[in-house]
Image (cartoon, rainbow, N blue to C red):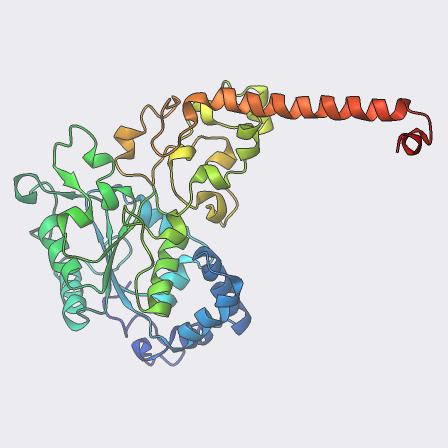
Length: 379
C-alpha cells in the first residue's frame, strides 16, 4: 500500500484520482461496483447497526454525499489477530474497506512503506487531518516503567497512542487487548498492560472487543459516525449497543436446548452431535454481550457455538482471568441469575412440558370416552 491518499488509486490512463474529493458511492461506481451492490452493502450495514430496514435509504444517501475518512491503524501489544480478521472479512471485502470505504493511510501490517517513510506518512495524516481522521488501535498498551516494553520507531506505544488518539475524531479500540488489556493484562500483568481508554483517558474511545473483533462491526461503527455524525450509543464498558447490547445466550441457536434441560455432558456425546446446549462444557454465553450469533464470521456462515465450541467470553473485560477455566462451568455468572439452578430449571421446564402433555392426553381420552351428543345433554 502506498503512503499517500491520492497515489493509491490510478485510472487506466495513469492519472491520479483525488479520491478525497469524491464520495464513497462515487468511488465504488468508479471501481465497477453497481448501484444495486452498493444498496445491498447499505442494507447489510443497516442490519449490522441493528437499525430497521427502513434506514437503509438514509444510509445510502449519507454515503452518497460523505467523503471517505482517513484512518490510521496502530499495532501495539497484540497478536495481529484483528488485522487478520480484517484481511479475511467479507461484505464488504477487505479490498472495499481499504481502497474504497476508508482511506487507510497507515497500517504497519499491510502498507508498502517502511521505516522513516512510514513514520512520515503517519505524521502527515495526523497533522493534515487533525480532528477528522479515525484511529484504530490493536493490542494493549504497556504502562509499566514508562511504557518501555513496547516501542516503534523510537517512540513508546504509550507516547504514540497519546499523540495519535488525542487528535482523532474518534478512536476505535479493536479487540479485547486494545479495549481492556486482554491477554497481556492477565495476572500477573508484567508489563502493566491496559486498554486504550485507560492509557489515554481524554480520548473519545469506542471499544470493539472480541478475540478477534468481527470486521463487520468495525465497518458499521465507522458508517454510523459518517451517517449520524456522532459515535454510536455505548454501554457501560464503552461498547456500541448495536453490537454488544444483547447477551449471546439470548440469541443463541442452542437456547431452546438450554430451556429444555438438554446439555452436552461430554465432548462427542450424542447431545453434542445433536446440537445441545454447551453450558455445562464451560460456555460463557450467558455472561457475554456480543452479536456473534447474528453477525457470525466467515461470510456469516459460522461462529464458535454453531461449530460446537463453547463461548469463552472474549468480548468481556478481563475475560482471560474472569472467565477461566474456559472448559469449566461457572456456578455463579455475574449478570445472569439462574446459572446455579440451570439444571433444575431446565429439567423443571421439561417436566412441566411433559406434565402438560400428560394432562392434555388424559383430557382428550376422557372426551373420546363420551358418547356423541353427551356434552350437549350435560349443557
